[in-house]
Length: 368
Image 1 (tube, one colour):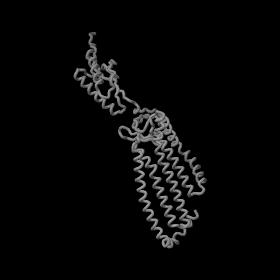
Image 2: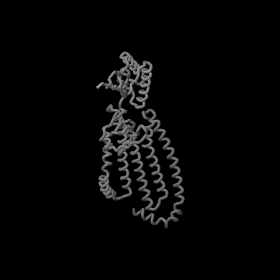
Image 3: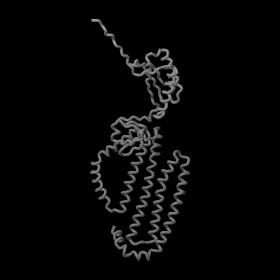
Image 4: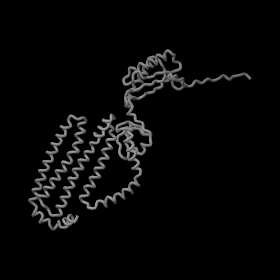
């Protein structure tokens, strides 16, 4: 630190002499910088082409190319900048204070290139976790892979910051000790955040849903759009965004509608009491034929039965399954079936009942 302070204190007095002595060297350094910039574009272009060719025959090739670009290209750029700085420092041969600054900066850049590569490598955790699940014959869990990547990235960032700070701060242990004391106070004030964090870890290991699943948590229903360390975001059917604390997710019941392979539909048809029994049987058979010939309705697994004597109607229960987990497919199929049943009822003369009451008045006229 003494060298840095002395250099900046004497900078105004030495500025003119500096320009006279180092002008030509500065021009040479500018040329070196231009050469390294051109070299950077060439190396980056070649690296991208090599990576793309190596990943061409791999599954998820586009995603893998993007990940490898994040691993390889940032360190290359930083290392080229480091090399430029080292060469320019050697050419200029600046005063001691500035040379110390340049040396520390070059070391920091070299460390930064290492940790940037490790940071990009953390993005490859998704494929590593996927391979582990595949090896154990389990469907890859994208949410777990996502959080493994986040945890590794946080660890790399913390380690990188401490390592680089050691180049500039001699007694970094005292600084970390002070930060740890403040961290205890911060942890006490952030108990809710800690609860949400543990809630997110519970979701990771319990695996109740994935990003993109349509779920129901308590009174909230929607598609899982994003899950962070603090909260989970659901997009409702009306496009409103619901934000749930992760601590609440662990204490509520969760219904995952995406995991089902089919949806059950129940309908109750109330027909008139005056409908003859043969017509009821024929109407039921017609409904079965409709279900048998409707797309997405599971064939052979349906039920049409006369179930109840209601107050105003004879109730026929229709139960069938739509072979799709999507709610939209369920609604469209239900619409098609309902229209076909209504057409069948009209053609056969079957009337649907509505709530009615018959009032009988007793004749009380008597001669006393």
